[in-house]
Structures are given as structure tokens and as C-alpha cells.
Length: 91
Image 1 (cartoon, rainbow, N blue to C red):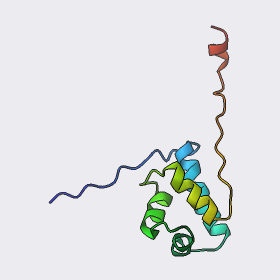
Image 2 (cartoon, rainbow, N blue to C red):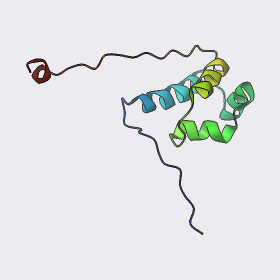
Image 3 (cartoon, rainbow, N blue to C red):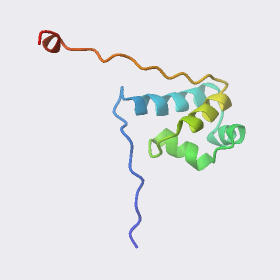
Image 4 (cartoon, rainbow, N blue to C red):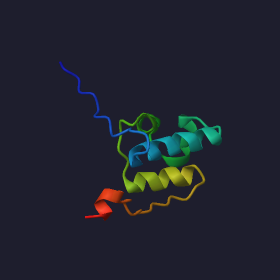
């Protein structure tokens, strides 16, 4: 039987996905809590938290809200204009 590995999401540094996964891990470490403790605080399975931190699970907005609350934080999402290059501005 062939096992399917979960598809890795874009973990290129600077990508929104990288920023989210990094922020979850960093916030948990700053609080000095384990994934198990974060799971207890949020009701999210510890295995799912591990997948989020490794970038093998793409979280829903609802899940991100629960994580933020469990980390004692507020979730903020912003849309930022894309910077245009000089060449694009001249056309």
C-alpha cells in the first residue's frame, strides 16, 4: 500500500504561509508552552498543531482564531498593496 504524504504548503521565507506557521511556533515558544498545552488551551489536536508548525496543514480562519486565543493574542489580517517595480510604473 502506498502512503500519501501531506502536501507541503509554500514555506518560502516571506510568504504568508511561512509567516503564519512561524508566528504560531514563535508565540508558543515565547510562552514556554508545549504543543500539548496549546492543544489543551484551544481544543485543537496536538498532532494538528504539529502539522501547522511543520507546514503540512493549511489552517482555516476559524482555526487561526482559536490558536490566537489560546496563545493570548488577537488575530489580525491585513491586505497590503503590492509594490510596483520602477519598470511597471513607467508603462
